[in-house]
Length: 89
Image (tube, rainbow, N blue to C red; front, top):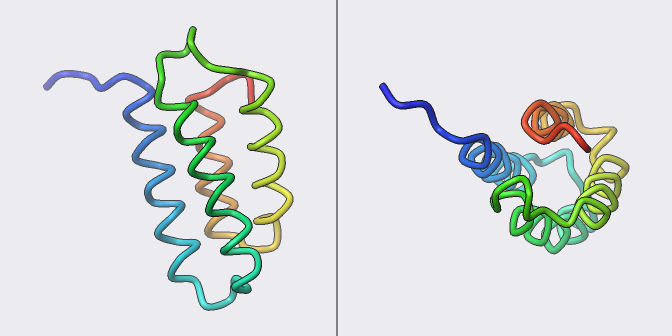
């Protein structure tokens, strides 16, 4: 079995995060809408090889998502897991 690169796992986690945000009835529509654009932009950066990341932008976007999702444990847990694969966040 071949090992996948970290960017593959990050992409999968962010895909799951989108799904959780979209289907969680406890997350207000306003937060869902606010997170969509941020998550799309973050995903675009984090699926690149690590040396090509815009670290400052990724940290800002990650922080915005963390603040928006901190009261929603399922989404927050997935977002926190991304940090295991992207050490500078």
